[in-house]
Image (cartoon, rainbow, N blue to C red; front, top):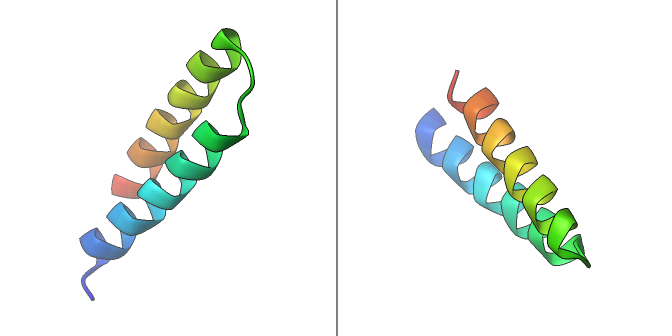
Length: 44
């Protein structure tokens, strides 16, 4: 697999786990932000 494919799969996995762990509206926002940061880090 290419590095981009691995990064995309890893990012999706991280984002999914973060979203499933949140319990409040505030938590959703923090989880989405953290997921976005993880995606940015993985593409660099």
